[in-house]
Each structure stands twice: as structure tokens, then as C-alpha cells.
Length: 517
Image 1: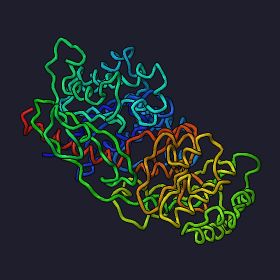
Image 2: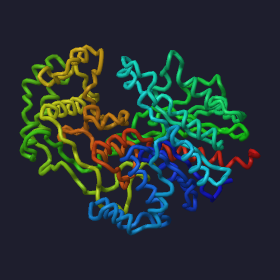
Image 3: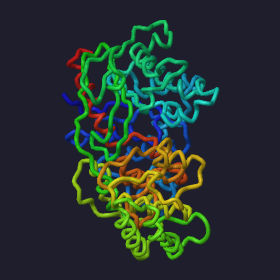
């Protein structure tokens, strides 16, 4: 039986709040929230500010967000003006969103905070993902020569998550991490095997005197009996199989306390919208120029200097050569008129119909925030134009071996990339008729892996486009400078996926009474 009471949720390592947003957006048939944010903890300053603002907005119930929030998005008022206008909602955010570094020094503070907010509530959920860079495949490849790698604190922050489990014995928890966790090792020992063993017996893992607490671990994507013999790969969730317009593969582990005889349902597979369906309605804009003057005419000159005869010669023998050079000439010589680097025009509803858009679009929004192109070097503009044109003609993103020699970067490992030995896809176009590749925090460094599919725009994705591919609502404001905004988007759990997970967790909590817990 579904409860009309909102279940408390505690969100650790919350980032900008993607996982919490999904839980908060789940509603009953009567429109009441199924979960309420009891405690969210994040240390990074910009992510925390984003998280705090979202908690503030959750203080408004029934009629949506106030008009002054939309004025804040447009820059008409400051965030202090907004908070001063609504002190009650600001107090809610101050009470539930906390900037705290999880670790031994703050363990007692966090323990007391959670205990106070839960107030012995029997049905609640713990969610979160310990920082994952040390487990990422790219991160590990870069750190293997570092003698301090195996001592990196990021390997062990999951034990802080474990401490919270042991302290509060949640009926159910969800732990998220990167795919690289499945193959990571420390001193020759499998990290995931150790984690699974610890999560099953948290008290034993922490050498607590009272160590009877036990959990059954479940996969969200595959049916199967929980237990020590479970293949860790069963915990992998491929987001594009569950409606997210992005090929994002992450580990999700659901733990149900052993006294609760409930087996969770699994996620329901359904098709995602494509990149074009998700971001194609956003206004066309141009990239910026990182050096020298930056005007529309300067930009046109920078990208129109592609010698199509040169391209044809360089690609001699390729079946698509003629079409490619012709398309480049047509598309780059005639970009849309008066193209600007930024647009605040909120677009019409996408033609495509998909549940994901119900959570993205806001009918009260009349200002598009975060849709400004970053600046690029002129040489990269030409590479982006070529790559996007190549993708439009061939249906695939080019490898370095497909680029004309004069378009290649001067990096020392380009020759190896041309041979397919490393980073051969240094420039990656997000193909319009498929889900995107994984939006990662690397998008904050440069846009090479996130090239817009439209050759005429000749740019990488904006923060708002990346946020849409992550299924964040268009009214979701990411605080801090643009680099920090990209980083927050790339590290987050897609809210649309999180809402589906929340449905499964709510069902477990609903069925606790039936299970006699």
C-alpha cells in the first residue's frame, strides 16, 4: 500500500543534487512528494551552493516556484535578494543542505545531524556515491605511475558511507559509483569484491562490537538472488536502456536490511530520445574565439578558411570525399544570419514525445539559462567543423586517422592516435540520432569530446545542452563559474534515472509493513 507520508532521504556526497532531485520529483497520484530531503551533504563549494538553492526551492509546495526565482535566473535580482524575500524557505535549506567534508573529523557531527533529522523514523533511505575519480578508468591510467595512488583517500571514502550505514541501519540504501570500480584493485585485491563484502556486513567491516547488522544486495537492472556469489557486473546500470539520452554506465548497489523480506523490482527498460530530440530545439548559437577579436564576422572568417580542394586531396580515395567537401563548403559559407554566442530564448516544446521531457521542460520558464558557447582556438573551430561535417555525411564520428594532416593537433601522441593505439577519438561528435556518449566532468576541461552535431554552429556543447542530456530540468540553476557548472553536470546522476530508482525504493518502503519489519 502506498503511503501518503513522504519518506525521509539522506543524500551523502550529494554533488549538485541529481540523485536527490530524482527522489524529490517522485509524486503520488495526488501530487504529494514520495520523499523529502532530510539531510544532504556536499563539500565542494559550487556544488553545495547549487544543492542549497534546490533545497530552498523544495520549500515551495503546490503552485511551483515563485516568480522571483525566474527573475533570479534572468539576472534581474541576486540570490541574496531571493533568499531575503523567502526566509522560511531559506531556513529549510539551511537545515537540510550542509557543506561538510565527510571524514573522521566530522563523523560525529554528521551522525548527530542525521539522527536529529530522522528522529527514529522507521522508513527512510540512504543514497549517494563516494567520490569516484580514483576508480575511473581514465583516472587510474593516469595515476598508475604515482606511488601515492594506492593511498589516495578517494579509495576509502566509501567507508564514510559505510559508517553512516552502521550508525543508523537504514532500511534501504543506494550506492552509486563509476564503471571502473568493477576492475579496480588496491594492492592486488578487487575493490568491488571488498566493498560488497563490507556492505553486506558493515559492522564486521568496521570492527564494531555490535556487528549483527546485515544487508542483502540487489541489482537494479537484472533479476537474481542476492548474495556473495553475485557477479559484480550485475550491478551495472546502462542509463540509455532506461530512457536517458546518454550512454552512461554506472554501478548502482541497492542494499535491503536483512530483516526486511522484500526483493526490489528492477528498472523498466525503454528507449531513450536521441541527442537531436533532446537538444535540437535549443537556439542555434556560434562558438567564441579564444584569442583576438570575437565578432560574428571574425568567426565567419575563422571557419570559412577550409580549402575544400585540400580536404578532397587529403581524403583521396575515401568514398565520402566529394560529399564531405561539398557539404563543408555549403554549410560553412552560409551559417545562419546574426548568430550569437549566447541565447536566452526559451524554445518551444520538442516535437518528440517522451517522459523525460516532462521533467526537463518548465512551462513557466521564459528565460533560457546556461546556453552560452565557450571560446575555442581558431584551429579547433576548423577541426570541429570538419568533424561535424564528417559525422553528418558518414553517420559516425571521425577518428584521428580520418583528419587531413593539416587539421591535426600538434600533441606528441597524435601519431599513436592515428595508429589507433591511444586517444584515437580525441575529437568526438555527439551523433544526432543516437544517445550521447557519457557526459563526464572532463567536459569542464575542453569540448573536444562533446562537439555539437551541427557543422554550422561549429562548437562544443553548452552547459544547458549537457544538462539536458543529463535530464536536469531547464529551471535547474548550476552555481559558480562556467567551468564549475560543467563539472557539476558531468559528475551528477541523471535525475530521470534517479526518479525511476526512487520508485523502486519507495515500493520497498511501502512493503515493509507486509514484510513484518
